[in-house]
Length: 217
Image 1 (tube, helix red, strand yellow):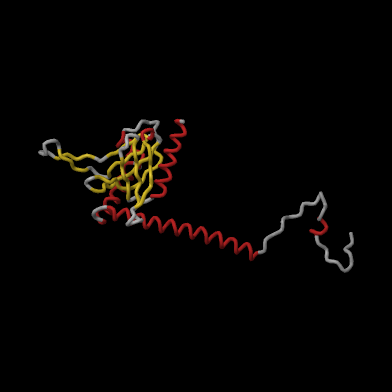
Image 2 (tube, rainbow, N blue to C red; image 1 turned 60 degrees about the horizontal axis):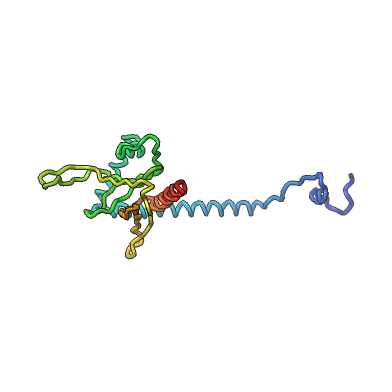
């Protein structure tokens, strides 16, 4: 076919309206492609920066929750060494709470349990059957009569079917101090604080509680 004199030949024009032709989609300009790529990269960097800032703030708050920042830092390092030596949080959880084989550990979070004697550093465990807490180290307590002192890990375990609520909250005076309130069906309350990954803990706790209720409905 001869090209018409005085016209510029265009394959797109030739294919317009042709049911047998499959022209390629219009290509974005190189400038627009680079601009979009930089925009996406910028959003990812911004998100990573925010996550890093949150982790930094939460870690600092975690250490500040203890009576001594130095002791808290050393204790957290010691706990990390223990986890590695004993084969992970799953094994520690099973040993601490005698978990049966069909109970699976979902998540574990470094935090503190509020007690009348002050905050106790430990780990919150969320499994398919319960939410639990175990202190990092054994704590002293007096035997009846006060003539002897024993040592034991501080533990809390609430079966999911006995958990009525898992509610996030924060201090009015210090918004950086965030808590999770656990309430049993008998209205026993436990306050967890100083989470390194607070938002994740809240999300997975509430998802577990909601999921368990849906299964029971």
